[in-house]
Length: 456
Image (tube, rainbow, N blue to C red; front, side, top):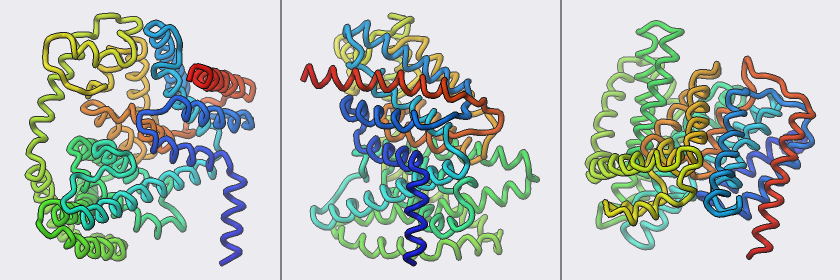
């Protein structure tokens, strides 16, 4: 046992870059939309790790638009505030750094990174469930689970992305099967407890992409059976999460959620047996998958306000379109849409971000930044890679069409690292170019940190 622990520690030390990225994801998940000082310090340390790498294999159709997007954010911030640290340019500078650093990793390092990211999402799910149950018992009724990210919608999509990552072939192999059998139901249970309808819709979009990928390589019958097994697992996991939520939040005896929590523990313990049962009894998997309609219906009944919320988001998008032509080149400036919305005489939405990231970026940072994001999304969906990675990307993009998860640094960092790294057809970048990019971003983060400290 001691020998295995020592071997694991030696592996982590040898793959220090993967560990650095995973630790960065941990920090970014806790800072929400970002703190300039924290992100600058973290980004500078990541750049120092990047300067030790000799080369990278990156997709220029993603890397270049990422750089263009960040430059557009810096330009928009400078135009609006007269300096570059007050907007998204510095905090979102962490995105190309993470993407490039992941592209520097060797295959075994990429596998370790994705496993560490999957473990972190599982840990976040466990902490969220534990905190939810604790508050239910000690304080009575509770609301939707917000977890470590502090927002149910953000937590929901974070867990959905983690679920796609856990089932990815580049992660789920070898001795990982036991860990996956615990993480997969845990993430499904926790995601259901957020009652985030946008995350559920994004999950459905990802599943559709996954099934389309399967249909391209398998017969229709095999694809349908795979879909039934997948939906059956989702029904059991998310149904358990809804039961825990209902017992804690919608009854006069919230401590009864402990019994449902124990049931959830049994689901985790029996997950591998459940998967084998579905493989052996395909007709039963069809029946259990059909019960997913009841799970979905229950979620809708629990949150009847979701329809009104979606309607309000459509009105918010219409408000954003009104300002889209105000300044096509640089936008109206970061954090300015809310002030314009407050003073335009129409409905005030009392939020910092339009719940459609493409429109919001176009309004505040200009059409160049918006076009760069669109190009990144299209390329990420079409480039050759594992079906689960493409499904994860589709879920992330779908969520950002009706919500604002892109602005939560931990969520976007997870999407970049989970679906990032080198793939077939990527171009190799020499050590000189890689080091130059890391040095430039290190300079940006160092300047931002110095400026904020001196002006505090």
